[in-house]
Image (tube, rainbow, N blue to C red; front, side):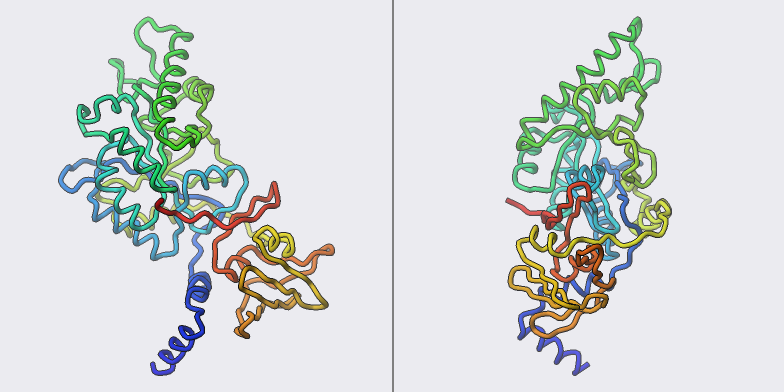
Amino acid sequence: MYKRIAISILVSLLGLTLLLTPLQAERSETIYYQDQVAVLMYHHIHDTDTSSSTITSALFQNQLTMLLSKGYHFISLDEFKMYLAGATVPSNAVLVTFDDGYRSFFTGAYPILKSLRIPAVNFVITTDLANPLASYIPSMSKEQISEMTHTTNFIDIGCHTDNLHHKLPSGEAALVGRLDDENADAYQQRVFTDAQACIGKLAPLTDHKPLDAMAYPYGITSPAATEQVKKAGIRYAFTISPEMATRSADHMLIPRINAGSPNITPELLLRSIQRRVTAQPGSAPLRLDAAAAAAQLGGSATAEGGELRLRLGQQAFTLGVNAKTATRGDGARVRLREPVLREHGQVTIALDDLQALIGQPLVYTPATGKVAVRVAPSVK
């Protein structure tokens, strides 16, 4: 015990605490899955209302804190779009989504998301914006939506149709069903016009972000409906199919895992995610050209003999080629997961090791060869 206290004091005196914490967290973290995303679906957060899609604020917070404690990483809608286009995401990636645009998101969920710096997107029924208190469950106002999207960089909104979130007399969802005496052309125009209206009403509330994501009401769509909302400008559409989202998924049929029922405890949510993880064939770790990566991050890397000298900001490291160790400028040694290698005239380092060394999460896009520090959730 006394030895541990002494080490702690020494680390503090050297001013290395902030650097060591990410390194230690990285080394102890369990990787449940990589290169896929658990997209979670919620609706209503309320402490007195009850329904099969309503959970209390305490349960919501407990679910999120449990995931955080187990090493899950929450990503934003923008990061999810980048992932679908080829960029990396952290291991155990999670995207939080809400449907319907209820006021309870602003009053119940948003304070929790804000305190934990967890990104989320809410898919809004825009016809309710005209009179938010008139709906069966009160909806968010334009001012509330604008406040969230303008004061944070991690709360986004999307479409849940303008006025097609209901059932027709036939029992079909209004997005996919035909009205009486409605021909194919009239149906297509109705769906297209509705999607345009939804996008148009939300656009002024999003600080000029593209409005190109939606969730289908009831999770129901059809090829004809999908074609029309895509024609209107939607590029990413979410269903209620309970699967993991992978890069190969149809961008207009993105699956989601339900997390918003009162019987879904934090432990049950963990099992629900892990049960749906897509099996991945063994593959080599993602490696980067050390010199190019360092330059893109504002530093430098030079290879001399059997050593790689890496400098990023005030941090300096010496790494042995073909070795799994790195020495910091202060003499402290760090063990790497993968060796530094000399390949085809370049010295390469594993992406996981590079981000662990600098203590910051990175995003790499293979198509462009670009690496950058992940944008941290922040309140403006």
